Image (cartoon, rainbow, N blue to C red; front, side):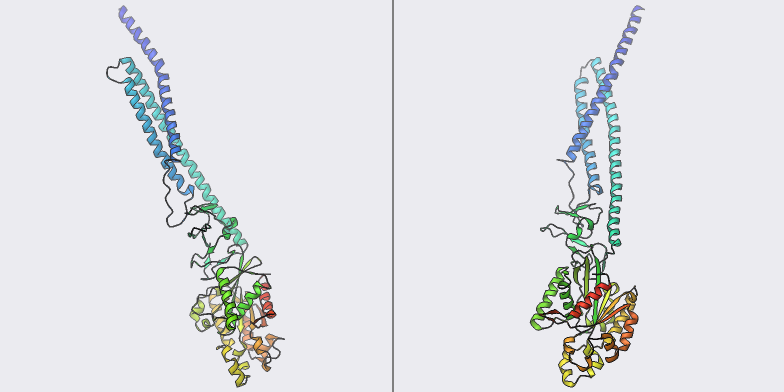
Amino acid sequence: MFYLVFALIWYALIATIFLIVSIPLIAVASTTFLVLCTAAYVRASKLALGPEAAPVPQPEGVPAYVHYLSGPAGRDLRQVADLTWRETREVGGKAQSWLKKRFFYYGMDNYRRAVGVLIAAGLIAGAVVTALVMAVVALGALLVWGVLFVLAKALLYTLRGVDSGLSQLRGIKLTCPACHHRVVYPAYDCPNPSCDRRHTDVRPGKYGLLRRTCACGERMPTLLVLGSHRMTAYCPHCAAPMAEGAGTAREFRTVMVGATTAGKTRLMLALAETMTGALGASLADEPTRNTITQMRAALGARGETSKTLAEDAVRAYSFNLDRRVVHLYDLPGEDFTDTARLRLRRFLDSAHAFVFVVDPFAIPEVWNSLDPAAQREYQSVRSSQPPGYIFEQVLETLTGVRAKKLADVSLAVAVTKSDLTEGLPICAGLDDDVRAWLADRAGMANMVRSIEKSFGKVRYFHTSARVTRDGVDPHVQDLLAWTLNRNGVN
């Protein structure tokens, strides 16, 4: 009986000691394993963002790197998760090997094996706690990523809205000077001189909020207010270069209409000389510079400008003036014999002003008043269609293609070739009152009435497109100043 009581007391004492020791031992083991796994997570994070970072895919389609929150962040989180799993498995494997080697080898006594069981229980508890902690960390990272992504999206649309709102508030609309399509946002070449990549839409989005990173590594602004307008802009529809300052200044579009050989191109050059001379404007793009240079060279060599070809795409002559981009369009005279082609000229719908070039020699009353010798002399510079016919064609087309009424559009009527009509009896008094001369002396009263009925603002000018040592005909400057001032361009 004594031995039975002693045995019970002994085993109770051993069990009590075992319980007292086992709880701290399990806690220490689990805590140690948690610390080791935490260290493995930190090490995996450093590897994922350093030596073993996920490979960055090269841009495809769009020549720019995706913004961090729109792709790379998720890729990095997956890489951290994969490396953390690898590192924690390695820690678990080492712990298992250590436990087996220290406490469960062959011939181990029961007390040592019991301690091994307690440590194993602690490691299992630590693994469970580690799994829970890692799950919370992963969910937290995903939550932070999601919140930042939503905030970035909100900032994205805010920036776009501010940029577009400022443009709308300032009345800025973009039109390609070559294909005449409306341009929501131009394309830009990478500012890196050694890179030939073109970005079709650099606005805040998937590829950057305030800055976009080109595939070459060059950073570029995404907003006009941040300086994207200082890069070379191109039309996203036809890839033609756009005017310098496109998107930062209001556009003003003037179209010159008139018959073949009426003198539109010569007058166009005179207007360009006036713009860059007396008005201090600058040529706004390289095509305008090249064309004006060629026109000057042709005028100096042959005494006349090259003819505007009907099959050519009519590209505007663009100028920067008074924080405006001024586009002048020289419409080929052949267009007025082809209504279908005329309707394809998109700029007719968005033009703010028109210049109607009238060849006095094409007016029947003037031509019939000349003697045969004078007719032979002026035959080569005479338009084939009378001004009345040309105006009716223009009016019919504009009425069909324009959404806005012509009553809001100004029209400058330019009776050209004053250097040739000087001294002709029928042209006497033309300089004094051009309108009265057209309506009464030249027999164009019906055309004058139609002009003034159709357009809200009309003025008549008698001009010469000749450029002499004294400069451009002052009436050309008057015509240009009136057209610009009537439309708010100082």
